[in-house]
Length: 112
Image (cartoon, rainbow, N blue to C red; front, side, top):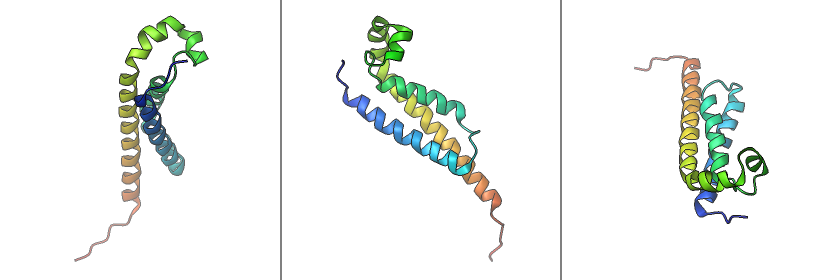
């Protein structure tokens, strides 16, 4: 087992918060059309960013231990940053859509 680094712990916290907020907004709005690809990409990269390369049996089965230790482990911080960026962008799109739909539903009143 490989000891986790502090960056992996931060990636797990931040990405869980972003993904949880996005899912909550999507369920509240009852529509999941905007930002879906960014959410999936960010979720996959987030999983790869803080997953232990040796402990994850699925990744070991697909890619092999030597590949994971040689290639995946050195780029995990970059995967985490990219995952955070994608999830943040997806959340931004979702909030922007909700705000636009809310403003569209409000009646326009003129106050002198």
